[in-house]
Length: 93
Image 1 (cartoon, one colour):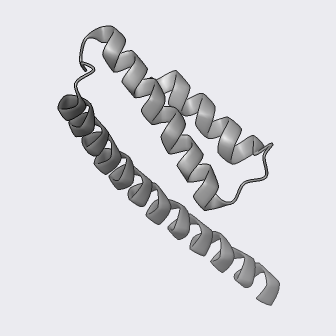
Image 2 (cartoon, rainbow, N blue to C red; image 1 turned 30 degrees about the horizontal axis):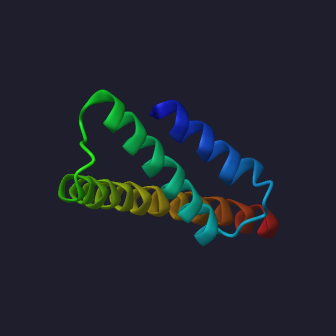
C-alpha cells in the first residue's frame, strides 16, 4: 500500500505528465490509493464485498485521507511562506 501511495504521489505531483491542477491531482491520487486499498483489503480479507462494510471502509479511508491531506497542506504552506520570507530578505539585502 505504501509503495502504491508513494509511487502515485511521485508520478501525479512531481512528474505530472497529465499537467493536472492541484484539485485534479488530489482526486486522481485519492482514487488510485482508495482503489488499491480496496483491492489489498479484499485480498487480505479485511473487507468483504458487502455494501455496508465497503461503504464504511470508504468513509473511514476518506476521513483519514482528508486529515493527512490537510496536515500536509498546512506544512507545505508554512514552508512556502518561509521560503518567500528568505527570498524577500535576500532581495532587500
